[in-house]
Amino acid sequence: MVRIPDPTKGGLTEKFPVGFTLVLDVTGRDAEDRETNGVTGDGRGIEWIFSDESMVQFAGDPSGPFQHKYLLVKPGSFEVYVGFDGVGSGSLFFDVVPCTPPLWGCK
View (cartoon, rainbow, N blue to C red):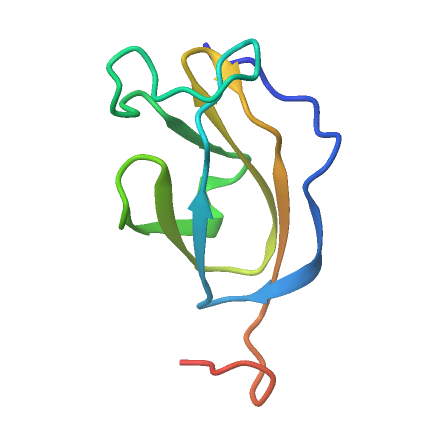
């Protein structure tokens, strides 16, 4: 079980439109906050944890387990953090808004 992080930072002022693709990139850290690739040395075991998984759709891992892409699929708010070797990261908080032309290139 991953400990839920204490959200001391990670609030974003930007709002993101439905249809936007987020690229989330993490650095593995151990319980003493040292960089690590985990026990296996390849980052296996990273858990991407969303407060509302219905807000996003997985869109690939272009650089392996430390980087994931997610498509924003509906308006609302959510929190995301990762767990690795039993240690939770800091949280990021996102606000997703309907896509409104011409502000964003809506599909």
